[in-house]
Length: 308
Image (cartoon, rainbow, N blue to C red):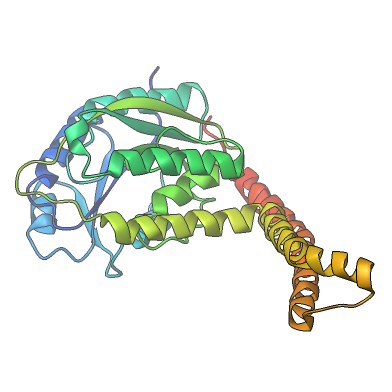
């Protein structure tokens, strides 16, 4: 299927990628000759921006450190029919991009995600296991999920990009992108791509534990915003269960003797019951607010034109 009539923007966030940026720009220009390539330099201290400019890419700068800040700036500044997001580390193959774009256009989708397969050595440490764990967590919390929520290789429609709030600051931006599609029930597809190792001398900016905890926090935060009733209902049930465990012996003693021993425990039980009711009520109120917020996001999405 031809997509020559669509404007295409290739967005490449970069930080110290002088070893790979030329290869990424060249390979994507070969696959998409009429696309416009944008490299957003995120405070590189090497020659990334200089090399990208010499290779013919449009180079812009985002001073706030973090991939989330870069993606937010890209989505805000650039207008196009189709957006392609790919990391500048040469781990994602350009030859898969035409199939991803064709899938987006032919099926009238809002997002196509490149699911990383192939080179297991490309993953650091426990990243592969952590990826699977987080994928299962998102699927459990939101009722449905994706195969690779952390993929940095995606194709978007304009509708998706211009309705995406982009609140994350770091590597948790991929999680937010995935949850945005799941929360609004946007049409998306996943295609396998051959993920490969970084070249020698290149290193990942992802911190296994620091960024892992940030991603976990972002998932919980997104779950709280999207499904507050489920979260606060769980809290209410746990508090109620704790009050039952602590209060049962007191009730049994009162039934047999008419006395209430251990007044401090009794006060704690009453406090837990009160907090349980507050948590339940908060969940009901916040769920109404979340539904209104979701409706507004959906209406904003619908105001944007779909791919013809």
